Image (tube, rainbow, N blue to C red; front, side, top):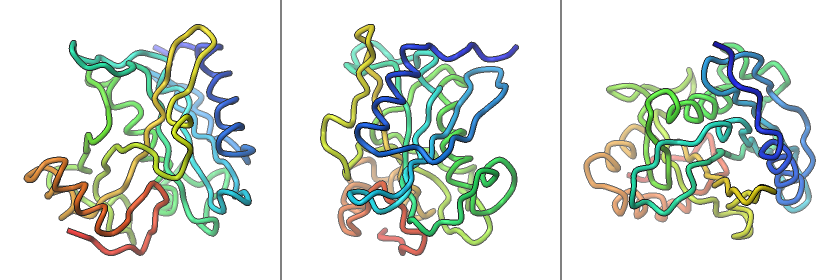
Length: 213
């Protein structure tokens, strides 16, 4: 079954939010067909205020996530991460097995995850890449992600306001080394936050950063 078309109000709100808080979109990795939700990835070019590229999903919020009772969060979310301006990203990267396209593929994979499994994604949830966690691509050490609040934005950029009153959480993905994934699993959120703070790690990916575990 093909995915439903995007909610028009949601799609318009996401486009407007990207332009307002991140900058002009260079191009979009469109998803033509999906059995759940069609996850598109908008690529925002470097700007004076944000001299790096930013990747932002659109389509994860086509359906609400299954958020348990007692959690005061929106059931709608989209995901983002930023890449150095010289990251080898083209309009076909990410749509095939090109090693440099792994951030695009990870965004799409995590965006579909709550809909595939009837669950939800929120701040400080972590997802290893397999068991045991394996690198996302040849040449990268990263083998999992943690979902975090964005740090390199104004606070109001963290929520997308839709004209019908809905709110979409815009969450960051931070790729992790295998031993950082292990710290999150074994030591919990506080232990991982301590690790990330030690390295001043943010949603801007440093492909060469060491593990801070």
